[in-house]
Length: 496
Ligand SMILES: [Zn+2]
Image 1 (cartoon, protein in one colour):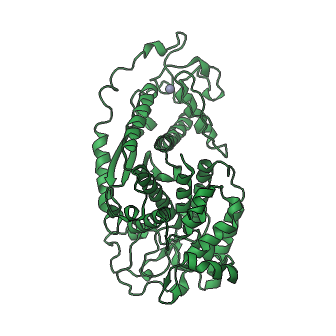
Image 2 (tube, rainbow, N blue to C red):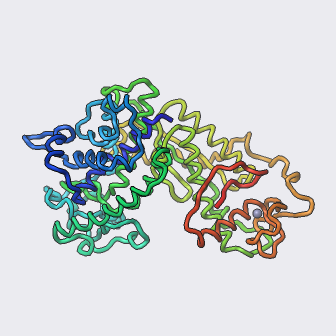
């Protein structure tokens, strides 16, 4: 994968870092402002607007030592340094800068709704005080989205805080919103300071794909409660994290599309057609049966096994998304959603994506059939989309199309060549052992003899052993690393 892909992804994630920095009161010298304002901020009716773009540039410049060094001399000379890619999004000049601008617009188009009942919306002077509105409040029965709403008609908000179990719950508006700007500034500043101290500790600056994965989770922790848009008529219900992650995914797919089709020019990048994107859903089937399956002869370790199995499903889903990203040459930030055994990612609509999709699906299913005998399987479905499909009001239709494609796929889980008898099933048994006592499906493996987690059971299959390990270590360990290792026999390659 070229460094440009990472520059584009990181520029997408960082393009609005200036909003965080500005609201936290990061200081910019008058000299810096005079020298750079005209570069990053559009000029309108005698005034410079979109001040956050200047702050994005200042942030990237000031903390460049904490970011991976992605700029080679050629890209920087062409105006495509990370700083320009990220901060020129309101004043783009090169095709690559236009890619971030377009991705930002499409990302806003898919997530932004306005107050229909409020003429003025939030005044600019209040931009620091605005707090994120919980989506659940918009889902109230009988309430239509944007339906004669005003800011006042929403009773709850999220506090500006780092992500935590407590922070999952919104609080009343008065408890979350500071009464004055000074109070609002203090809250942002506190969050920003801790964010910077964690940023300085991120490892692997010399390995951009890994660093971007670290950064994406740090970014989520610190910007999931920050509203992306805080002034005007926009309903502040989208976090800075969600907005920037979607921008990064869209920008990466746009770049890969135009690069592969040799159309990396301003006119083509700005064009609302053709279908440049492929939205992909990966769906695990049979999860419920797998997690709650019984059939073994023992109920020992039932809680550990249940915990381990449900965790295994979520990690398998993440690993499937990761496998697909690697095959398609996309960074991890291209995965938009990943929850409950289902993920969605945005890829470029080029033949290589379709080929990669089919190859990875076949590879994963053959592994699943070998190890889970078809009890669990995965299906990839996709729909092509044009930039126009992300524009205001049209996204729900696209989302529905993707859902229907996933439903269709569900009923054609395996192709016939893959399903049927499990080859060599009986040969996989050790003559001295029988079926695994936990699942009652796979042969017990002699390698698990004497394992401390199996209690008085003589042995288990490798997969149940792994799941029991996971289930017991999940509650005791602080970290988990997934590493690539050579796979012995038919065992799982999960290590905790
Ligand atoms: Zn088993």
